[in-house]
Length: 71
Image 1 (cartoon, rainbow, N blue to C red):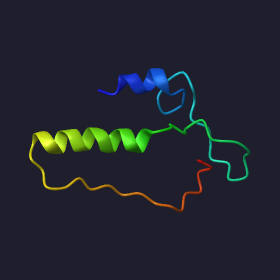
Image 2 (image 1 turned 90 degrees about the horizontal axis):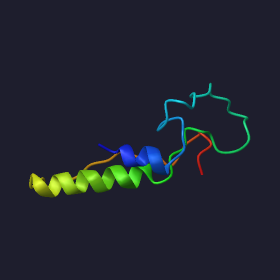
Image 3 (image 1 turned 135 degrees about the horizontal axis):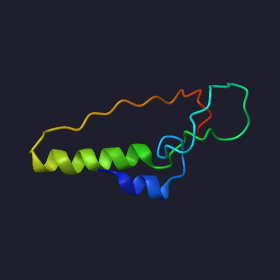
């Protein structure tokens, strides 16, 4: 349950009241789908869970090349 993220990050990915816009590659500014700290939060939760279940690894997939307009 990451409902706190809804309170901290105003984004169309965290609030049902904000519509997800159509993709516009030439749009200025940061898209309203941007959630600051989202990946590190998910990795932190995964690490906590991994510790509890004695997992040997936490694996993530990230990409430096991102054409979404995120900072």
